[in-house]
Amino acid sequence: MANRRTTIEIPESKLHKQEQEKKRVEMFQTLNQSLASANKAVKHYLSIKVDGLWPNENTTDMGLRYCACHQYGEWKIIVPAALMNFDEEVIKGKEPYQLQGIYQSYINEMVDATIDVVVIAIDTASKRVLASRKMAMDYLEERNYFKEDKGGLSKIERAVRDNKNIESRVITVREKWVLLDVLGHQVKMLVNDVGWRFVPDARAIVYAGDVVPVKVKELNIDKENKKIEMQVSMKEALPNPNVANSKKYPAGSTCTGTVVAISNGAYFVQTGDFVNGVDILCKIINSPELPEERDKVLVKIGYVNEEQGRIFGTIERITSKHNRMLNL
Image (cartoon, rainbow, N blue to C red; front, side, top):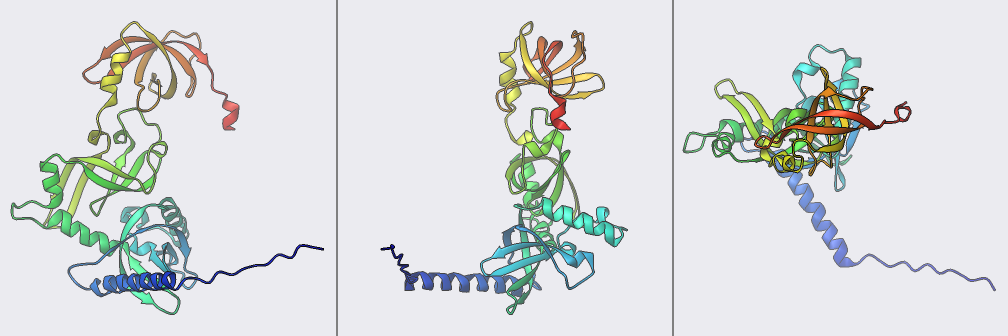
């Protein structure tokens, strides 16, 4: 006799339904609170994660067609590219077909990043919410960069005066720079400021959605014209591991490492991992064959500046060549 499978359906508990309903109500109230503040001085903004790109098929305007989106319970929050606060210099004067590629690329690179938005419209029928990142950032800039406390300093100015680290959100990462949200102001941090070690590609170190500490290297605020010039450094907010690690490599010793970059005849060789190793600058090559990037080499240490954590050496020979066929 064949076995008969019986499916038992367990009804959802009443308590669970009540909790879900309470959460739905709270989410709707949060959205309405933000919407009500859109035209007020004090904004109620939401911090949301970019889930992906959402195309609005109902318009041909590229700034409104391509949107960042976030699923907020039963609601889909959409932020059109025109309200994402993208660099105006990048999009200025571009043709629609060029803007299409720019907006798609920018939003896809922001997936997993956390952004602040203010709700500007709610469609209860479609469960869609229209939001503006630009409105939220304008509000946060005003609050953190231009509004002065009793001592005549803004929040960012006081942090700089006190030499404090500032927790900043990673928005976008490319090979040579990282776009950060620093208390509501977007700052492009160059790859040289990502870490104390030589970093050929910032995408190997930080990712969209990360929160990293930074120190402000330079800050100029024109409060009358509402303009901000700013440079920040992640590495200056962190201890320099090269100072301690350089003591492990005395002059005259040898070690193996990997060529990570070649510039103007100088070879940058990294040893160990990113935390425990060091970078060695080699301008003299005794090897009969010139190494290439990603080759492993034997290095003789020539000079060590322990105070700055800088090491100079000579490449003696190639110990292992990188298989370049793997890159084809």
